[in-house]
Image (tube, rainbow, N blue to C red):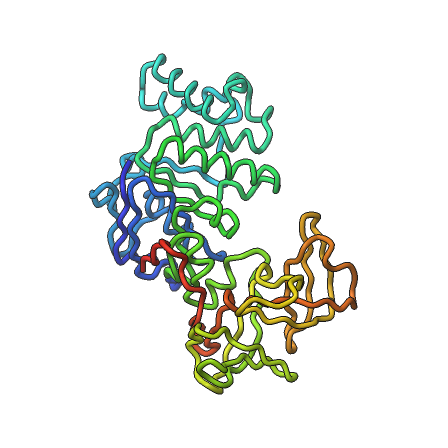
Length: 378
């Protein structure tokens, strides 16, 4: 196992500045997920760690050793790609053990390592089959097994689940997380799927345009986003942003949404905004519920809304309605809303809302950290 330290890393492709001075320290044994939209530089960063892309400037250290000029095979890292890259003419056992055979390890040791990896991944009964005889999930397990048998210092995953259907993605997420718990090796995982990032990571590194927008634990980024981009990227369905204006101050501050709608801001919670300042109110669907209690709790604002769209999922229902002049989505219980045009009372939890400066994109007020929650690492 090993830690990874990246310092002032840059990468250009012609006039495109793909990675822009990234500084990142990944602890030994940590599961770090690099996430962001297409073109943000996450796969380029991973490939530079693997040695598949050259470094224009800056340094990459693995276990305290600078590896910039080291060949990929000498870095002692194992990479799992989006494409399984299995040899079709080889059995599962031969695919898993191919790298060990290339290193001329003894046959008994190869068989022992292949058997152990296959048992760990639940594919021991498939060792004699060929890739064409396997499902997508089984092929991905073989690709992961090929990495496991090498006992590398670091595992690198480049969107390994993107070719699988939804059910298999769910299963494989659990398998990969269980694998990390069992072997505790440093893992760096690239995805554009924020659900994968939230469920897998010890730490999320969210990139945008070749720089780190924010990093921290999954709940930290979810509950304490520093920018509008972070707030909108994490969460499914995504956060709704409502143009507004801050009015009043002290214990009488409120969020004016227009059309005569003013939501009182929770007393004792700083808004970070001045009276009259233009802002955006960020509301997550799960922080809006159908009203049930006789009296709203402190920081909860109750309003009637007219349902515009109903999207049942079985365990819950997503409804869309207009707040001010902006469509907003709420997550309610399965039978809390039934049809377009229905009017229902909703409770808006402003204790969990965020306020954003629309000019800078910075969050002015986000949820306070939970007791014992560590702060973000910049």
